[in-house]
Image 1: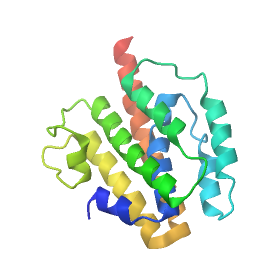
Image 2: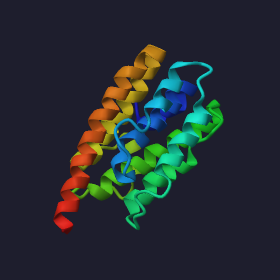
Image 3: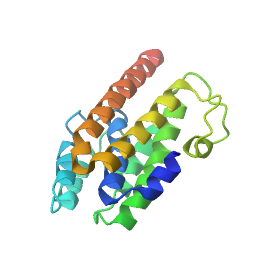
Length: 183
């Protein structure tokens, strides 16, 4: 099943986790530490979790950091800014879809190997021939997160977080390598 189809079928929790996982993997661009989004992940486990309050705290911690004109950083910042305070299915569906696109674009920008597709939309729809390694890994992670939440509900949150942590480590290494190359 394509990523677009998985997003279309996901419930509110799966959509929120999908968007949050994309954002979590891009935290290295925002200058945040590995624990930055942990409270948001925790709020997904509780039906009455304080998503809006936790979201404002995260935004406050990021505000003023990573002021970079770099396009990848700007996309990551927009993912955080666009996160809806109201965690309804309609709101988080739009956000999860936008985060999916932004995260794939970020990975595409940072990959040393050129991706042959003209846009990430083809990747999201399942056309994967000629895909660059970093984009391929991000696409797999996005699909895995949605499948985990669809198959296990709240029980899929921990493994989804683990998938996200792995992706964050990869992106942190890529960002670090790029920074060393600029010095």
